[in-house]
Amino acid sequence: MTLLRGVAMKRLLACALLIIAVAITGADPAPDEATKRLSTLRYGIESQVVELLSTLQTEKNTEYTQALLEVLDRSTSPKLRGSILEYFGSLKLNDAESRAAGFVSKRDDNADTLVASAFSYLIAIKSTAALNDAAEILKQNESRYLEAAIKLIGAVGSDDLVESLRTVYESDGISQSIKETVVLALGTMKAASSFEFLSTIATAEESAKTLRMYACTALGNLGDQRGVAILIKASVSNDPNVRGSALTALGTFNVPEARSAILEGLRDANVIPRLAACKAAGSTDNAAAIPYLEYKASYDPERAVREASLAALARIGGASVDTFLLDYLGDTKNDVQYRAAAFTGLISKGAAGARDKARTMLGTAQEDKDRSLFTALARATVAVDAPDAQRFVELLLTDKDFSVRLGAIAWAERNRATSMLGQIQSVADGDSNDAVKRRAALAVERLRAPVTIP
Image (cartoon, rainbow, N blue to C red; front, side):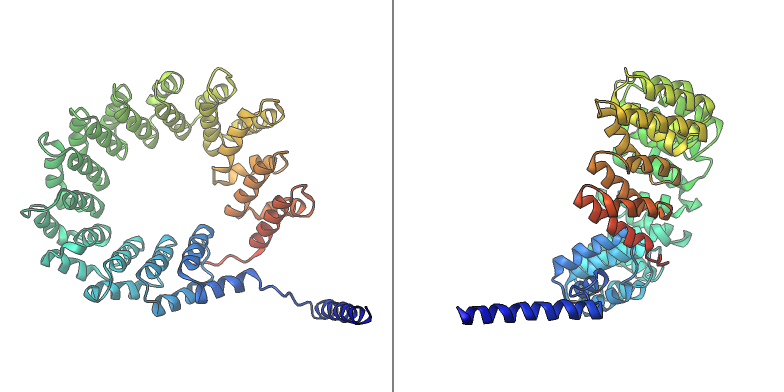
């Protein structure tokens, strides 16, 4: 018994000494988040690093670029290297440009998946570093990398490569997929010399449906006013998919002829072109489309068309549209999903007075016994990444539902709403839910951290 007491006393003394040491030095036995992340990148297993890269992408965090370059140089794993290039590409960071170009240049010595990742990265940052290699791949018809090379040429190439792309398109035995990639690349390049070629494909009823669709898209990207007549003709073709692509492309031309064709598309019997026409009407700010869109928002049989009509109305905007959207939001005969779509339009595009009224309606819905409308509006609110949504998010931060509060905190962090720091700190200090408190504390830490500019 005496021996046991002695052991217990020694353990108590050791614990006390540890507590005193920590109190004196202020040391934290656990590494901080930044140190842990750096260690994971340097020493973690592949799956851990890939998962962390995904998190860093979401956060738009550029704090570890040098460490990632070191991992990229040391690693022999095509998957890990590809994930690192994906990270740099998603944030449009050119730090790995020379390395990626090297992977393409020495493509015979690297895994196909790594070369593909290098191409994707170079396309994302619009780099010309591997353009000569891409032209050589076309010339030599290197089938493994042909599609990636065409995409790179489309992203950063110039008129002098148009003929090379046409040669590939017209080659014997070329696949449908490669032909489609060529057509899209020509549109992305915006090379005037490709107009006649694209027009022929877009208007030929005997051409494959997908090729005609992509040719319409390419003509829209090309921006040549001569394309309007071609696209109007395609907008009444036999195939609804081609009609839809033509109407979408017409949305890039804000001229009377295009706007008139879009109005006719709003009356199409098929949902595909009708949906495309809704979006095109919004992109051309076509005020003449307002009564059509209001009708569709109220009576169209397709959910997607109703929601697209509401979004297009919000984009066109104006006092009459704000009034319609407010009335639509307040009308209990409309389904909750459509009322939420109208609410989204008011937050993101409505005038200040309309937004004030929408916020009042959100508060009213918050107090209702049936919270189905409020839940839909709360989800719509946190999906709007714009400063005008902040006043709505602040209301959500006070809600009784912990999941709503979590959504509000995530929005504040994602949008770097530093003016909400005081409110979020209050949540971190005194929320009734431990998970919310922890999430709020983390958001405060990240909002207070300096922004790293790429």
